Image (cartoon, rainbow, N blue to C red; front, side, top):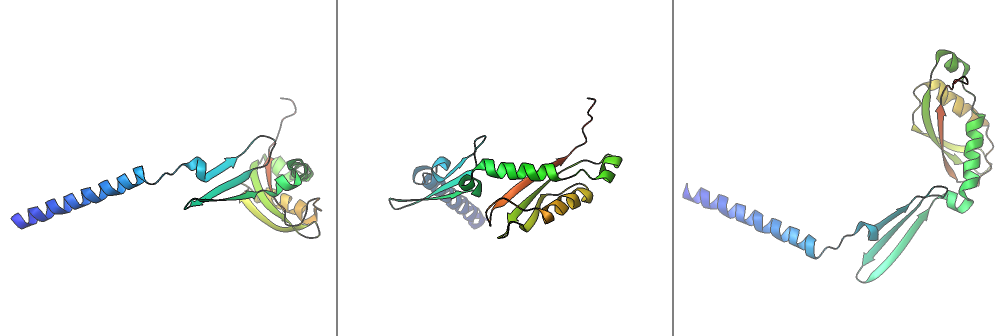
Length: 163
């Protein structure tokens, strides 16, 4: 019984010492500041950018990933998104049944200005809205460079003109 208690005490002491060393190391030696590691800048009317810094042994490497909209100009992409959103007709049967939904897609532009890939990022509540969007995109001639990926949010809402 006495051996078992001393084993428990030594195990508890060992764990305590290891935890103390672990926390002391990170408190005094590991200088982690999120602002030095990752910067995300989003401003109204501008495009998003992502910057990250990798530091090691006195060296600093900075990498920057910028969205295609910064290279093209966010106004060009916003105009293209608005053109597509305005071209999508509200499905008549959805209007008659009072159906509404919020949807979103990522569209990749191909070499010839048509869509290369369409990915749903926010699924429509009703398939009829997804069909209406895909019908327009199938026939759409994009005014953007090949490889551009655009996010197209669409809110299918019924608005009463009397309100």
